Length: 157
Length: 157
Image (spheres, each protein chain N blue to C red):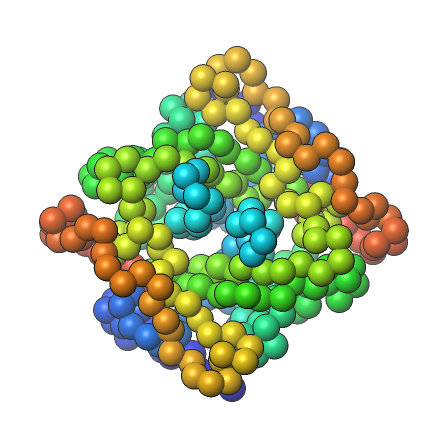
């Protein structure tokens, strides 16, 4: 069983050794996932209490799919399972950080790219020259059609 | 002016060159901030439209403070200004990634640590041996009392 404590004081939450996560109104906590191999940020996901528990217990990343409204064992359909090398929690315990090893092609993005963050937004001086997003990954690591078939796209407009 | 487009199709959002961010019901988009120096994750913040615009225009990180309900120019009171080296946006454009250079001591956490993610959560085999959080930063980079004085602590229980 994963022990999660009620939040009783700022000192407990910020300086203590107890897991006392803050879930938002939807019952979710944000989760940043990075590649343990090189530190690259792969994705930002969300966990409900069950997903957080299962991740801690199994050592494989589980999320809450907001588009499908279901527990999501990452890689169950794609094979791109994420094995957790390290989990961290932040100061006020409302965000989690995972460092993972990714199975298969090593990709994490449902569009087929390695990282979900495959486009740059021009900022500052670059922004004043042009506002188009810039692709920093030029090729997909897999074909989503091969991996997901006719499963509905999770992107919500 | 920062051009932000209405979201009209999955293809536009995922594969296009237009910035078409998705703000949640509170009008916020999540922002992962990493240290450009070494790739370490420093914090997870949130931006409203104005904070995103100001970050893009000025090249310095602006957030929305959920605890204070106000626009937050990071470093305005602490001196720990974050200069943006790169901004990225994710596949469905509901999360932003910043790679920043941090002024002053280089810290980003209001508790005084370098990163907000200064504690590990034991996972898998380690979890079965014990559930206490493990501090991975042993010393604070600054004294919050010196930097923030009597300003209210932003952690919400």
